[in-house]
Image 1: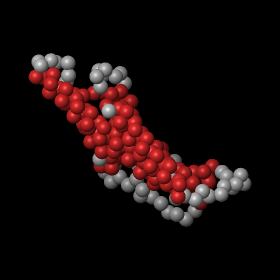
Image 2: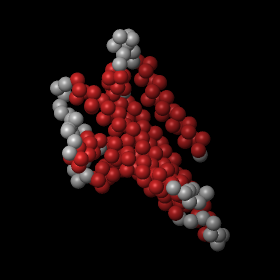
Image 3: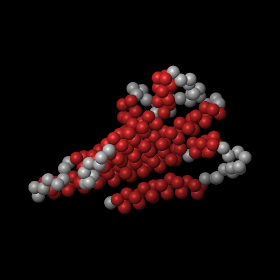
Image 4: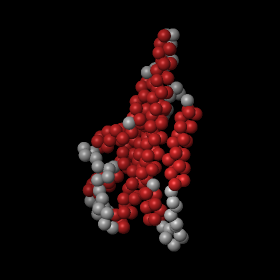
Length: 206
């Protein structure tokens, strides 16, 4: 089952990365116009495709965890019929819940956002009037992608709590840190505003 999941993830990655590049025209970049700002802006243009890739991988992992949880439920039912207490419901429930959260990733992220903000608005900024503003948008969009990956990783870490090896020390705290950090990165605009207002710093946002 794990090999099937790895194969599916590799297929999705190849589909979103290799196939589009076959039809894309590579821009000409010289050493004179290559800079950190240019690299970030070029990466910014690829963020939608990368976000689709991350979401697709989350869907595949979600389906895998759900089927794996159903398999654990079957083992639990069989162990109950044989009067065995080696299996518990904790593992199947954790895998099914985490799989559902990954399968409905946008809704899971929205729930996480509304937990910290009453009216979250991850893309609610921007005034496109200056090069500085475009640079900030590129940086923040990349941070949002990293936050989405961290959120998914946090959910995956939670599945360690339902593994056969028992409780993994620090797994819950590590997973919760990734989930909270991912949420803060996804809503980076409002998070930065909170930090600025809390410490009375000059605003860097136009």
